[in-house]
Image (cartoon, rainbow, N blue to C red; front, side, top):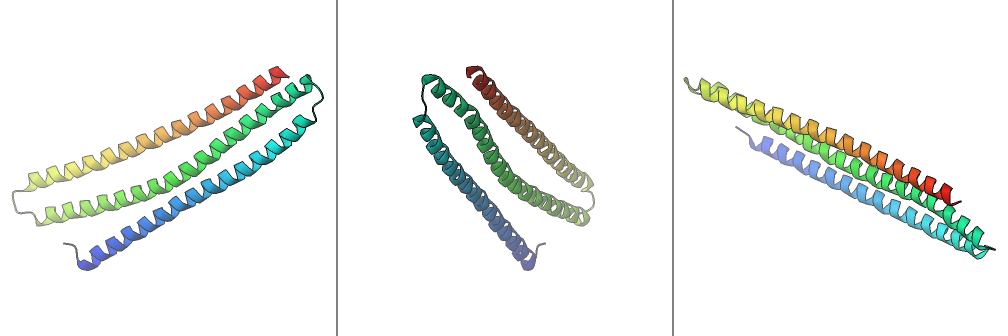
Length: 181
């Protein structure tokens, strides 16, 4: 069975994992705050520049050209902002996923060890019950691996779709802006 030292070591490892994940979560929040501050500063600067440019316009045609020229960079900046948010979010989520996967693998090994210990100490005639238990553990491990692969594939598809959508939005804005000029 488990000794007090083993339980204490497991609790210490779990506490370290919790604090590590908390630190990663705060890093993600810090990155988002920094990104938002930078975007806000840039937006204020752009707004000031645009207002100054609008004040120096001499006719309606020049004003329309100024307005049309505003949309393309705005769309590109919005796409870049979304991409940065996605990168921060997916990076933080990946850290949580690694920790979860690591702890799951540890738990699977520990449980397999318990099952093996039970199998060694099982009374004669219980081979069938032990085989059923080992089969259930193997099936659970296979199910976890299948779910993990499916989540990874879904994440890859979502990232690909996000990249495609962002590129399409920027291209559409470029085309619209070009037509208006």
